[in-house]
Length: 407
Image 1 (cartoon, one colour):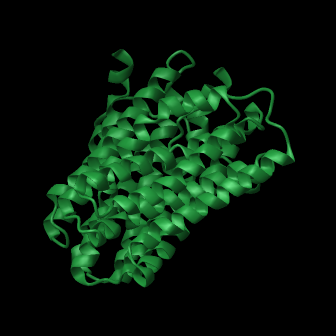
Image 2 (spheres, one colour):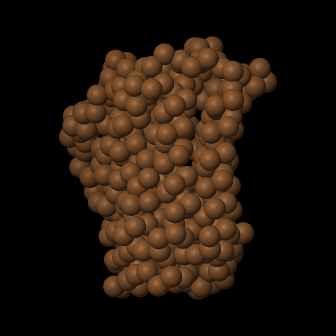
């Protein structure tokens, strides 16, 4: 309890930030449909978000070093608030893409600052509990962000204003907290090739994870509309995906620690491909079936990033953990930036099922590559502990690195 209280301000900021910025993706998709945007334009908004996310990851450590944690957090939060509240002032797809870059930079920048702050305050004795609470808070905020869409009307100033207020409110816990700001951590060097050198399979896995997650989160609402879901039901559709990914993390972690992680990735690739077929097949069998399909899809696809990251860290030493995590995050962002544009264009050209056909093909490619890599070299004898890794900032490796070594 004392640990929770000491980090209460940071965790409250995480929840408010998630509620404010996490809801803008589905709201933009629904609003875009309402305003007559093409599906490709709506997909571009998702890609713009992840482009801004990448910029925020890169810039945040440098801004922290220049002005300090609190001021940097305030700057990123202000950018996110502007990106949200200006939507209904400039109703244009290109303008919205620029605004989504601001909200994406806000998410990455604020998470980088929060994770740097947490890392400076935890000790080896409190790290495990702090990270567990952090993951629960992050998932709770993400789930709440999907559900809030059910009560917001698309293309209405009030909806964006409410999200902007929640984003702005994330400033309060940190700025009024009496907790002393930590020293600025050294920014990790961004060396994407490191991930490929340590494990080509892991690099491929996180790219596929980026493609899958971005497609569902950013373009999933369009799919929901195409199969006849209303706005409130789309919120539950997206929430079912998050819940599915959350509930399977513990058993997947046990499997990934007990068996060859390449076998686990193969199993997840097969399950992901099957979940795409199941989700499309259940789309005409009622709302409850659509929710079940989304939950199965989340179970099969969300853990791929963490399993891939664990496999990459098996081939790294302790001194490489932070930079390797940054490299994996970079590759995730590459997949996430490209995916919404491609997926939305496919839906526009070939219909709603095209999204899941595209995702299934990427997982079949991962399956084939996994089988190929198993012939290239044996599994490592010594392995790190499986860690449910969030895709939040380049500094996340500093937070969770010791968890791997201590496992």
